[in-house]
Length: 322
Image 1 (cartoon, one colour):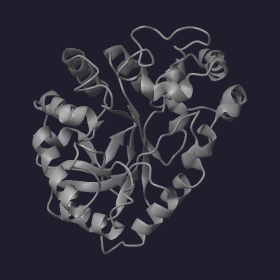
Image 2: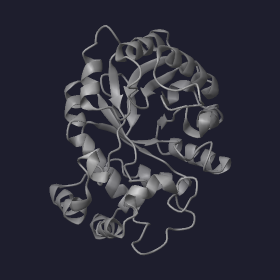
Image 3: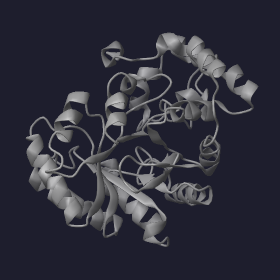
Image 4: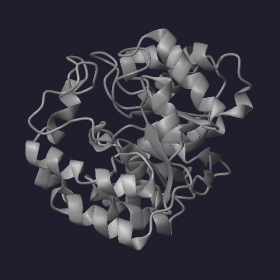
């Protein structure tokens, strides 16, 4: 496993990190989830990402048990806030920032998180209020560093303009994959200039880039796409034309002696501003496959072949997907 520096922080994170959306504390049985976490650490993964809203606190509670026997300094732990926990608790107001960090720490059973992230931008709260509250959290020792997920370039610039009066963001968590390249347009260039690294989610496009979903064929019964609880997240990737294009990646991966998942992960890691790619796993074997992507380097010919195979389906403007 290789490691990369996270923005302007002193954190070194594994190139592959373990996420918990739609899985831990919810969609995956507890013993299997624990096996995935254990295997991740065996393979050198040191970075675990979660959020208060995942399984309505269940993911954080699961991770408290899963990580309990490990020295706190041996892993990098990230969580988030913004999405509704119930009818009253949502957003990035000062009240919510100070309340939700304490609730997350209690569920995780730790004294601090390494990274506290705004899960989205809160249009209903002045940015100054959010940044000042997040700064209080850091200065109280409850979080070491701050990040955000899916903020636009103007929103990021506005937060940067407040520094040094407030703590500076060190990470951005966007959706990014061979099929979803929106961050390349504005977010990655801006972050690169300002000491902010990317921690990317859905680098496998919810599993589509593993090649297991075939055009004209029902999804495997045990897959995310077939799941009543998780299948809604896959709607963007269900078209037969897209699935057929993804199958054209198979011979590219085979020629390199790697799996399609490893090809997709190596593709996002080719970008130096990406510190880590978050993967979700429901079986330890998936962790093995994903972790092996660390250190794979793709040459220009391979990158060109990937673009030729699926380039017409690559989204650079989010309005393309509407």
